Image (tube, rainbow, N blue to C red; front, side):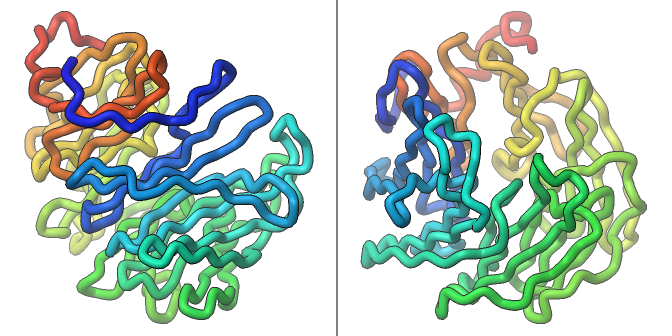
Length: 341
């Protein structure tokens, strides 16, 4: 398999994986949060997706402790990288100090700013399309299963936390509608509107589901949303936003794939990663509800993320401990019977 570009990660015999990846909405920058070693360490790698150049590598320490970042997000214009995490209290990487840290890295100046934002638990971060506000989502903690769920808005200009928003259920993920200044949020088992200016939740956009669904993508005209739930089967619901109803549902066996990695691939497909490193990648057709193409992966490769051009894939090579950018077409050209899940 010929690689177009190779991005080396930190090599370590104990562990080295791309823990989190995120590509900016403009498709220019990719942030890779590489976790390596025992005890755990991390390195942030930022890549220009057009030139394949590594723009920089960073580690983050705080107050003499090791900051373990739980999530990473690149702002829509590709100029800043946001991270949320906590300072590890032990070398085994199991316990955190109580406060969550939000880090903002300016890629143009290299400046780094940090602030404390709520407690550490199941945290992730996302920035509004205008880059003015970040949202740190706190979905409880393993030690406190009955705790409240909260959203912590942060003014990125002042690096100041705004009034927290309590929710009755965890925010699973969010899709933005920049032209309207709104977002669509998967909130527990509901899909609801969210006003970015007032920071308030609005109407439900679909009947309540039986399980929490993740919002995979808008249709090109943004009139519909594709939402996915993954267990022993993959279920994809197509939601008509105006009608506030589910207009199609498709289910197929795919084997416990990571639902957070179900993402758009070009204008016509969603890409489903394998359920294991030896599985297959498939392209699900948004229009027909069928799996159009499958690609088997060798056991030493796993899908990291698609390239924003919808024609190439970043694969993680366990042997070389590196990310490799490859053309998708040769993978999908393999015989179908050799590429099953």
